[in-house]
Structures are given as C-alpha cells and as structure tokens.
Image (tube, rainbow, N blue to C red; front, side):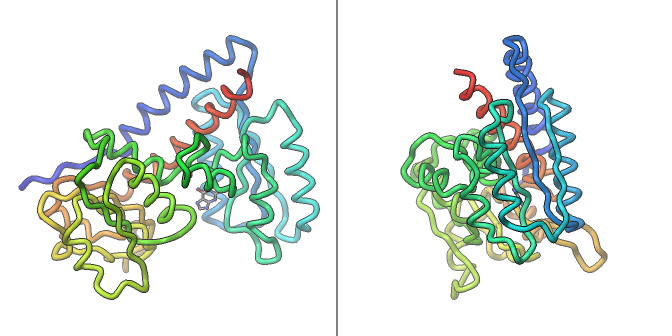
Length: 284
Ligand code: GUN
C-alpha cells in the first residue's frame, strides 16, 4: 500500500489565501482586523511561536500587535491589560501565549479574555460551546486536524473508529469532541491506558498528541488508517520529530501527516481563521 502525505504547508497556504480575501473585504469597509498577542517572560519556544503568529497575521493583512512583558509581571497588571483589550473595539482577537510563568494562574488569565475575542478557543465558554455543539471558537490545533481530515474527503466519520492519544485541554479533549461531532466513534487513550495498541489497531483515524516520540509505531496501526501527528519533539540528534514513528508507520498507513510541515502550519492558519471570524462577527 502506498501511503499518501497530507501536506499541511499546502493546505495552510490555501487557508491563508482565503483569510487574506476576507481581510481585504473587511478593510474595504474600513475595518482593520486586529490580533493582540501577549507574551509574558522569555520562554525561547514561546518567543519563536509568537513571532511567527504575528508574521502570519501581517502576511494575510491582519494587524498583529505583540506585547511583551517581563516574567515578573504581577497577575493584577496582566488582568488589567486584558480588560483594556476587551474594552477596545479596535481589537478583535486576544491571545495570551502559554505557558505562563508559575506565579500567574493560567485559568484565571484565560477566563479574563472576553469569549468573543478568545481566538485560541481556550476560554471555558468556548470549551462549553464545543461540548454542546454551539457556535464558538475552536482550539486551533484540533480545528486544523479536522480541516486536514476534510481535505482528504473525511467530512463525515460515521462508522469510523477514531483514537486520540492524549487528553490535554488544548488538543486531546477538544479533538475528541470534534471527532465526535463528525460522527466518529471516539476513544481517548492516555498515559493511564493499559494497552494502547489494542485500541489503535482498531482505529480508522489516529490522532497522536501525547508529546512523546514514537508513541505510535507500525505494529500499532491498521493498514490504510489515517494518522495525524500533533507531536513536536526532538530526536536523539536534536532533529524535530512528532509522536509517530514516521518511517515505520508510513509503511502501513493510508494517509499520514509529516513533522514538520503537517499539523504545525495548520494550527497557525486556524488562528488566522478564528481572528478574521472574530472581526467579521464584531462588524455585523
Ligand atoms: N502554547 C502552546 N500552544 C499554544 C497555543 O496554541 N496557544 C497559546 N496561547 N499558547 C500555546
């Protein structure tokens, strides 16, 4: 069986082009879509992420302002700044990069963001909307994974078994809910699962989001399955790799996403989609 790659770079470029068109339409009405990005502290990975999020935004015509604060920023000051951004009609999306320094309560900070500007989809109101099938912002990584499935014609997963490996609030849990909404029969596996392979071998769709390399190997995959790799790890040579043993699994799977060039660019693209959506809703 020949595996097919799901090209995240190509799909993300297509999505960015659509966002650019929607941005131009808003600008023609005198509205400049605007994403405010807050970075607290100097986590090196976070610095790279926020810069690329701002660059992607600018490239599609969205305005992005990056606010950097020292790790010592008191929580009250951060909450005040978020309140000001909530009140600013010229700001459509607010993103606070995680992780936050330990003295800041991430839940309290996220809940301070107005749900209509919660373009990360992390607010409890967004999570509740996803759970109950109401409109709201969807977290960017699982949202991007769903777009990847749709790109290969898997819109309706009725009759399909889906296994999600990982149960984070940012990826695993919302991923499971989105697959469920697409009619899949969903199993969530995690570090407490006794026999991961027993579940993955039954799966037509596997989303690996464990944050651990080689969590999925060839012997754990049903021939022809679709494998989506959310992982971002380093191998023994310091090279970027996912959670999936790509070289092994590609021999068995029907479709697979590469790392890099798979889910990563899609996560970034979906942030732009959420931001333009926020701006469009605000202008209605
Ligand atoms: N840290 C790692 N991933 C993300 C993300 O998608 N959004 C934010 N705000 N922080 C993150």
